[in-house]
Image (cartoon, rainbow, N blue to C red; front, side, top):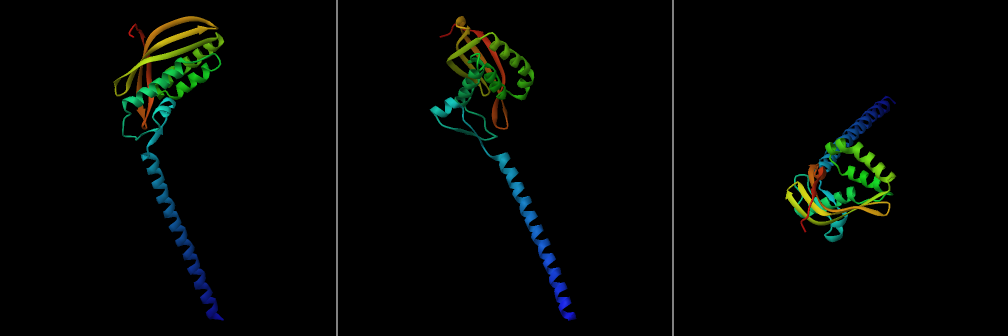
Length: 191
C-alpha cells in the first residue's frame, strides 16, 4: 500500500513537470511568432492603388525604402488635386475631408480648420468647381506641377474660368507619399 502512494506521488510530480514544460514551450512559440509578426509588418511592401493608375496600369508596390517613380507620383498628384478642386455643394465637405486624409501631419495641423470652414462656406454659397488638368510635370523626386483649367460656378452661373498651375510637394511617411504642401503658382497662358 505504501508503494502505491509513492508511485502516485511520483506520477503527480511528473505530470506537473509536463504541464510546466508544455506551458514554457508554448510561451516561447508565442514570443517567436510575435517577433516575426512585428518584423513582417515593418518590412512588408505597401500596395497603393490610385484609381486612375489602377485603371490604366494596375497596382503599384512601393517598399518602405524606395521612392515612387515619376508616373506614379503624377497619378497621385492628379488624384490629390482632384480631391481639392473638383466638387459640388453636395460633396465639397467629403472631398475636402478626403484631401485632409492624404495630407501630411504638418499640413493637416496647419490647414485642417481653415479647409473645413471653407468647405462649409462653399456648400452654403452653392459653389461648384471643376479642374481639368492638361499637363503635368515632375519637378524633382517629391514635387509635381499640374497645369489645367479651373472653372467655378455659383449656382448655375460660371463666375471663374482660367488656366492655373498648382505645385504639389510630397513627403514620404512609412513608404507612402503624403501631400506636404499644395500651392497655386498662378495663372498661366501656356498651352
